[in-house]
Image 1 (cartoon, rainbow, N blue to C red):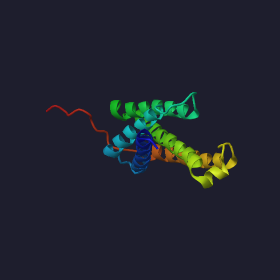
Image 2 (cartoon, helix red, strand yellow):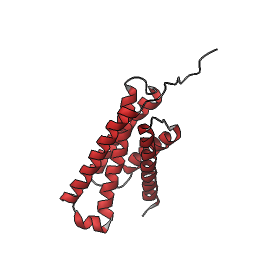
Image 3 (spheres, one colour):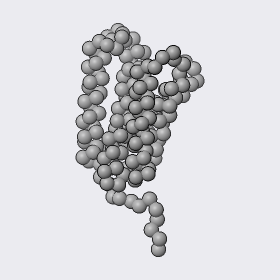
Image 4 (cartoon, rainbow, N blue to C red):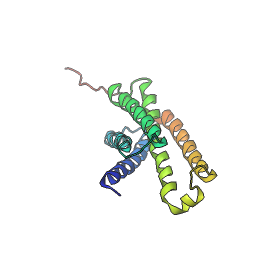
Length: 164
């Protein structure tokens, strides 16, 4: 494993862990600013470094990475530029959960590639065990997203200090 691969994997794992902390915060109406920054930054770094691996053709991982970058851009815009005001709160929640989903989606793919027992069940990733695993992940994240949109409330805070 190269240093580049190790860095990419570390970004991914940190992004997933931080993402689940952020998701828990969304479910309990807590902003968790530091965790959110860590999640968004490492998840973006994961997507961007994913384009740095040598390949000869466009792969599904590139498509997922490109979608993830767009979703992350929307999440960051909603969170840091629009300050989650009005409908931007829901946009932020949905895009943050979607970004975490894409990271976990790729984790499941990698587990089926690299864990011998899982690879034996779905060596080409077109077999039912792989599809079932990804369907379970998708359903779980749709449920998480719905719950997070319903539960994430917070007092509006001005980004600029009020002049006295």
